[in-house]
Image (cartoon, rainbow, N blue to C red; front, side):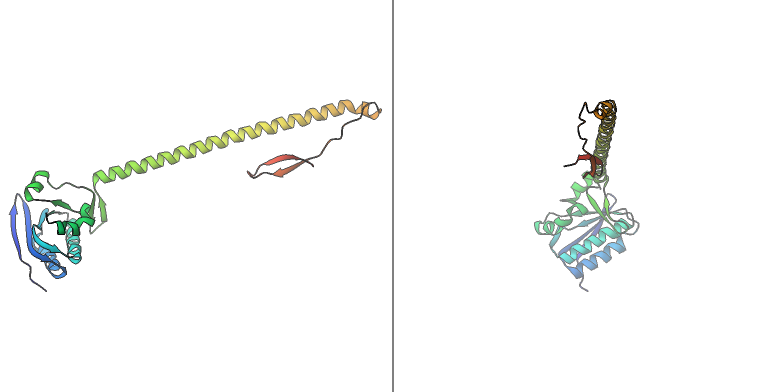
Length: 217
């Protein structure tokens, strides 16, 4: 395993670990071991990458593991970086880290949760602002769904009432026809009146599942 050149100091209650040179799979593993051994009982650790000239994908995975290790113990990790090449390597996971251009910038803003955080115990954790935003989106979605359900329910109620009204009118019409036929039957029996032939009413099943009248052809 290759050696790692790094400096170590403490300021404002923060443990600062500053590697230099190139970080690859081997040196990244060494860095992780150093952080694990030096960060015990620490609440805040700063990984100073200002002197790192290149960063491999494997080293990025080691930094993700460092973040996970620290989160698992309840500690926080911040990264100092200004190199465009290193920032480009970290950009896919930018929201996972607190990245500052200098220690002064970190000290002025503090360890503030923003975006997603990587945690060994819970995987991806949501910071409070993101959780609030997602909760608001979910609440809006649920409210919209409830409005649609209520609107559909009221529509069905209205259509059901209209169907009952039409059925009532049909029943009253059939009774009126029967009454008129009963009154005119004596005249028809005497041959004084020709009763119109009554067409039988057939019922068919509509697409909606209700039964409606259909006159015989």
